[in-house]
Image 1 (cartoon, protein in one colour):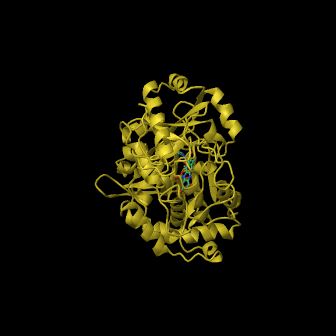
Image 2 (cartoon, helix red, strand yellow; image 1 turned 180 degrees about the vertical axis):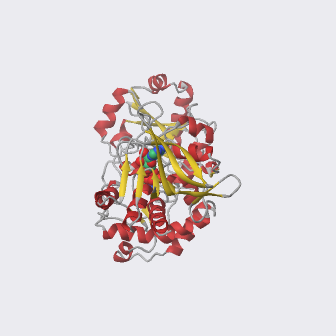
Image 3 (spheres, protein in one colour; image 1 turned 90 degrees about the vertical axis):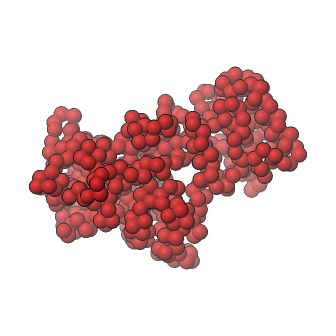
Length: 474
Ligand SMILES: Cc1cc2nc3c(=O)[nH]c(=O)nc-3n(C[C@H](O)[C@H](O)[C@H](O)COP(=O)(O)OP(=O)(O)OC[C@H]3O[C@@H](n4cnc5c(N)ncnc54)[C@H](O)[C@@H]3O)c2cc1C
């Protein structure tokens, strides 16, 4: 029997295993895929913390209290306030720990990030290589503990069930494809991640909400399903909000790292386009700064998607600083034009009529929407939505239509835990022996009903460390 059996060797699971093993515990890690690291391989790795050494070095006066207060304001005091408090208290220690390990901060950070409702201080920290910068510094610690025999890793083993002995969860049933294997631990820590890559599970928790996923492929809600079967309580699903900018690369899937539209806020880019719904009508001011407002306006539409309509001059126009800033992140003017020839998620045509035919948007509506927008731009007054950025008419062919989805990077619902991170059942009773950390708890637990920058990955790392330390000595 292991001292600690960890289910899922990703963000939270790795830090839990490392910390426990460093304290001398015997740790078993069951991982369903053929590699460790989980969402670290894809994540943006934006970590928030108030009061870090890095902030002090940069002359940023911040604190746990300010971070906590900001989260309460941003989320309207939703989420689990005990967990949020614990997360922000541990966050600076987590960042300093990474710093000690040689974490390579991006030179410009910490920053205020406007892709979410902004904090009042520059407290979002990230690496030069997104979340892989985290992986790079924790992997050597993991390897040391594996080498010393303190961590035993079982790849390609999927948790399928849990069993109790004498009222305590000590046994995990796994399936390796060839064998059914039982693992035992005095404590079992669930770190199986989210459920954004499982359309059936997502639909059960968010009926009627379309899923266009950019979650890590292993985020299948396996852990949620197993723990729910055992009587665990699922919470915070009602806080679900999507992220803006996904384009559909394969059916039902977007990819935050390879093709993403820069439409989450107009702080970083002035919109040269208009956004229209499936009726070819505008539905919001395209220069809205507040990311949360934008996400909610798209989520009010039952299809969670919209079209950005622009013309050739919009593609060619530079920002005030003289740089091109195309609507697709990381793309060039040429690559956008080339992609439009593939007609996967962006289309172009010599006339608005032809564009409407290609996209299925109603011809007359699209034409009248563009005409009205052009007239309002010439008059420098958006009478419909109050847009202030009115620098471009849309009249120089070819015309473009980019189909943009509200996409799921991270899931808000998760399993209910108490402030000791012990999983609770439907009646609020502790499921003895069972603990949870990371997205298994749901982003709603640590970020309430809004996206707070860095409040998924930092709590995942921190709660993993807290559990590793605590359980190793109990
Ligand atoms: C593209 C992208 C960008 C993001 N950007 C940010 C950001 O900038 N800031 C932020 O705060 N958050 C961000 N997030 C979210 C954040 O990265 C994740 O919430 C966090 O990394 C999840 O950590 P975790 O340990 O819970 O899960 P993971 O790291 O996903 O690990 C879960 C592990 O459990 C394994 N597993 C699953 N089911 C089973 C099973 N049945 N049996 C055994 N093993 C199993 C998986 O294979 C995986 O290895 C982003 C997410 C994505 C996808």
